[in-house]
Image (cartoon, rainbow, N blue to C red; front, side):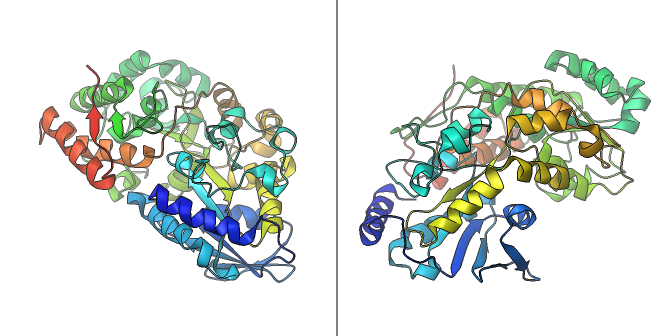
Length: 448
């Protein structure tokens, strides 16, 4: 988004509406997202839902209001481009064409909570008190959804601590046990995991499918943002160059599958199948539900979770009321129903296996094997392992450029890992591609 243009347009929108209160709510609620995840959760817990069309594009509420779902793919910034275009037209759009709610990911939430741009309504302006209504949420999720002044401009139903998810049959064969505690001791840190990786390699298995699988553990530990506020230079954190050197070492050692280049491609998906030689993946709860489970073609119970070698958070979908909405009451109700109601969030955890965003709720789930065990995980209660990771997460500093930096550093160094270009060429390729994605970037600084 071109900030100056967006600010001018949205200032005009606010001047036209005066405030977000409307005498009468609109008949159409437009929600922008990149997949059906949020829609499914609204359908599950929002009591005003009547029905959804067969193609999933329209949800009708009991009062006759229609939710229109506008979905665009997240990859390569497509979703952001489409959302930004619609935001720039928000002031002049007819009421039933205005954006009412939109979602963002942790990788770019910072862009949309910017106080100066003001496209995400402060929750207090919707009548939501974060100190009271969201008091039970994990604090780092509230910070992530806030602007630089500490004003919360979004909320989320999920918290995304990550675990190590492993094949039970491979663990039994190579490690002599599939018990999560015993396996956890063998993967407790990177050095210990390297020794376990050597055992797996000797038996004909890969520890992880791809060098991309470990990226989030390093990327979640950076000390400074990729781009600081007001700056036009990218500063590469040492954690990122450590990931590059470690990934090269692990790939050359045979701990990754060289045929799997990155993530979100067919080879990566197939590496989750029953014929694969891959031992483990590093996933938050959504990764197990949305990615691993659909790609697994064997019987349920073949996988289990344990602690990761390093605590990390991966992802998080934030829900924002949009400046200029003509449906502020509906927006408030949906945000509260899906992200603040403990019972609703526990329902989402039971039905969708999400690790949801109330501390007390997740502590309850961790202690409730009867209601929170997973058939896919062989009856294991994964919340026992997710909860302690969540309580120790310190979110990495964010910037509006995170999605592009995260995607392009991985794709630019893929050829280096595969041995087709040298390190300096990979660096140059990253610098070129990042300036194409973000023409305003003037400098890329690498650690010494």
